[in-house]
Image 1: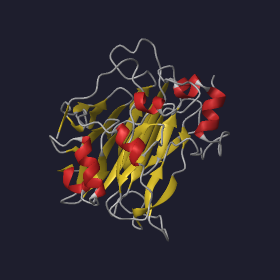
Image 2 (image 1 turned 45 degrees about the vertical axis):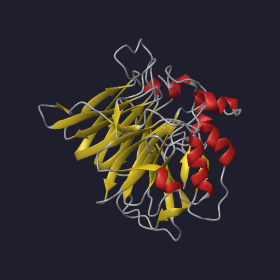
Image 3 (image 1 turned 45 degrees about the horizontal axis):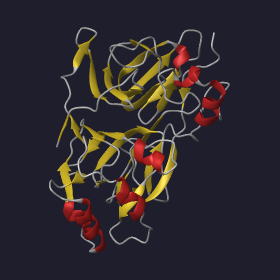
Length: 337
């Protein structure tokens, strides 16, 4: 039997100038004296809180256990493949871009940063900017940065609770206030700041503009209708399937059994770590012969691929995202603006 088991992760709260003191939508009991922008759940330095491997980081555990932890579908068996985090913008984030894999490698980075955003909460009028307006060129966008009017050339769209947004590498983007986001991304923090509304922070225009693409596949995902399970008492929604990650939403009122097979119809026996992030309610993650792990709103539980199967047992009801690595080549998702 593997010595691995489901890990309850400690969130790492990251102060940002655009963040908030009020995280009550996700962490009702947390109190802060500085603005928190992000709660990192599965970063390289995020630590396990339960069991004999408590206090070890995901980076340490990936180096030690390799594919037993991350699975055989992961591109690098010695690196944890996905970073999930909550974002809490109270003001606009800087306008940013992340390189895709090809551009990142030209810059001597191991890989780029493609991501997706699940809208866990949204106030009326909440917006994001995703890409450049149709017809805008990179040179026009660069000029608008120097003229302090870059916002005018961005494609601003309203967002609503329950939506999933795909943000391909090379997409200019930013978040406005009013939403709480669960971000799933490649394990990379390669970010180039292009515009910051006059804040006294450095920009990264040379490498950032090299990374910008005028057109990408980014947008709100077009998804099938949710499927009912357990006689209609529970629901499963496929939120996104993309080259680097698959994310599903489960709303459970009855226990449900999961496997660590990689996502995709033709998984070919490949396995993937499974990452559960609760957005509402409470449940218990159970594996035979191991201590149960409580999963409540704001928590992340990492289920190593060597575990093979596990059960989520709701305590009345639990709603959570499940992120994993696809088994093989997956095209970019169908999207709309």
